[in-house]
Amino acid sequence: MNAVSDPVVHSLVLYRGRPARVTAVTDKLELDLGQGRTQRVRPKDVTLLHPGPVQSLAGLDVEDGEVDAAWELLEGGDTNLAELAELAFGAFTPASAWSTWRLVAEGVLFSGTPTGISVHSREAVEAERQRQEEVAGREAAWSAFLERMKRGESTPADADHLAEVEAVADGRSERSRVLKALGREETPEQAHRLLLKVGHWTPHRNPYPYRWAPALRSAEGEVPPLPEEDRLDLTHLPAYAIDDEGNQDPDDALSWDGERLWVHVADVGALVVPGDTLDAAARERGANLYLPESTLTMLPGGITSRLGLGLQPVSPALSFALRVGDDGAIHEVEMHPSLVRVSRLSYQEADRRLHEEPLRTLAEFAALYRQRRVAQGAQLIELPEAKVKVRDSRVEVIPMARTRSRDMVTEAMLMTGEATARFATEHVIPFPYTVQPAPQGGVKGDGLASMVARRRQMQASQKRAAPEPHGGLGLPMYSQATSPLRRYLDLVLHQQLRAWLAGKAVLDRDEIMARVGEADYLTGRIRRAERESNLHWKLVHLAAQPDRVWQATVVEERGRSQVVIISELALETRIPSRRGLVLDDQVELKCREVDLPALTPRFTVL
Picture (spheres, rainbow, N blue to C red):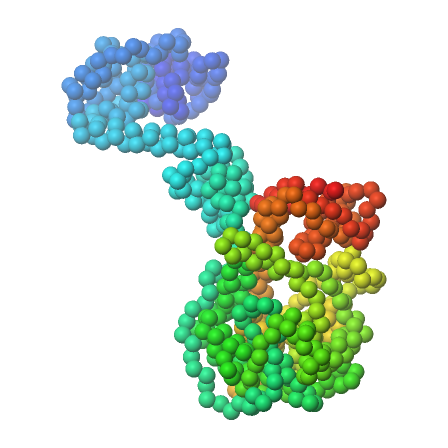
């Protein structure tokens, strides 16, 4: 309520920045807001501009008066609404009161309230005019920017505004003024879509590592020297690290001594002990992140250079000696810190040499072990796999053939996992065991559709502190033990074994399970980053070949669509259901469209 007098009927008041006419006064004021609108308000909600009488709000604006002359006369002083209206417009009327108040509200020459108005100095006027010009310029630039966004255009000057959109697309922020102003949802997908539309990002920008990976750079740090200790010299045994072509972190190798199968594993536990800085770096990351465009490691590169099997003439290892019976069962387990001399082979090279010893014998025992697992309920799910590589913006999708040597290595790693789990159980060493319930029901057949159906029956594996069966692998107990360069929980397992072998204290069950919880969370994010990055680049690869015909196999019926697998790309996708197409039928497809932000391809069925 105005300090000079109260509003009365037909007086002019200020309500929410607009003029209003008082039509009645009771416990509240009845206001005419113009254009047929009325409002009942408390007296304290309005400010008196003129006592009236005012019969209508029409015609309140007056012609320009002597505003500059009034300002010059009063410059640097104080006044009130009535005095300023008389000086600027010649009289204090409802119309001049409203026009004068508009000048005060502009804040350039004057500021304050109707009863106390400050008249600005020349310097203050210039500063305010400059500020308002800057604000107007920013508003004009913002409007022009939004118009460019709507047209699907951008300029280098838009980078600052688009940085906040990038933050949403990368998962670093949940809010974007730009997306909100454009009426788009503030989601990573919509942010990605806008950045592509306006050309700020190209399809070769992969946002998924930024959204999901716990760290976006490899670990760094000094690599300590190997400790002085007795190691079993196994350099006389031929040892083979068999991997995909181009593998950069060989952490396992195989030997045969005439009686036992040896699995040598990079001895990371010799250099990385619980609680040191290297262990902390690996623990913060959880695992290596393998992207088509790069690899980010949980340990410094110097660890791999020193400990990767076959990267030095002689490598330190933690070697597992397994005596395997003719029935494929593991009858004895030993483990030793060792020295080994390792030859590196690709799977293709190993396949060509499987007739040679010791690879022939190793393959035979691997086959026996596999038969035993199958007899114990192992689910053999062999779906297409492919490796995606990006070099200099060129995308390459390389199908991974299933070969005897790959199966041999897989079985040897599973043997080691079972053997170490059994060793830990027998010696009461706290361990991260990997368990999985057996699938319910059986699926017959060896086609891709059967493999997909079999996969659907599988429940996710889990880490536990006590041994339980791993139904999917057909093993009574199992621990992942052969990738300490690449997986943190494998490293924890090695740390436990090494401490026990040296007669030192091991981590207790609670400490192990704390590491399991952290690693499960981190590796879940890492696997998602890898999975979505691979799919992103496969779709980029598809979009670049719109005329290519792809062979696909129908593997599942799902509502009104059918799920198909393009084996060459190891890509599982959907097509509209086609009459006459049944499971395991072949179909030819062309890529009609790729929606990169949604990670969705659309195909034409030929």
